[in-house]
Image (cartoon, rainbow, N blue to C red):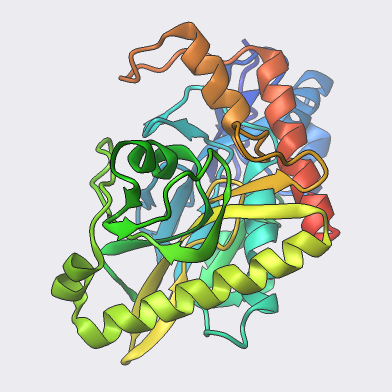
Length: 343
């Protein structure tokens, strides 16, 4: 195992990575670029293959860790760092996807900017120069995968919009001819486009538990009728605008989920925006109703785990290199097509 570089003259921050080549998780001293001359060639090679699994920024409070993001609280803002962690069936996997955090961040920035005319969002800056002083030694790691955002009080619901019958919506329709209590026409097929997009909210379950679909009346009970109607209207408007844009780029947006928060009485779009983690995209050229579609998200990973007959409880199995590579390529492809950006 390679030893971390140690400099006796100054304390350096810690970063945990997983090497794509050796798949070993390594906690090492994260070095600003002007100190890399002190590294061995082997360490530089290992760092170039790094997958960021977790972060620890000295000088900031310990972050709240979600399935993918590490969230640091500063005096008047939040710093959200998208790692390369990946989850499936509500379990974080032991292997990350190279470049995933930067993909999620770039995609969110694109949509936050593009759809800001519909609703304001929480994004303040992605420029590390604007981040708190303790972040500066981490510039290389933070660039492209982090956002400084406004603090907001999150609403206790996931706002899901479905334009097509897929996933759990298809399963529920087969049993009840409805989704989240919304009656749908008889005879619809799997992956078929709905007459109109529908708002199908869910609970926000604690880590390790599954979200549950809830009727709109329950959203009204949780956040009040007026705010519930507002988030439904905004969610549908965002979906329709994004679907129209994606279709011009050769994709259908099958479904997506949003999170909203409130700050000083104003509704804000928070968390992420139409990423491959929160949305299901299908190629228009290969779309055919009546069957499942090839999705530009982490479906490759889910399919692999289903084939293993894993019981969907921790610990999760490791992913083989070819599955990791395929998933990374899929994330990059949808990003390039929709936003014109690469990591």
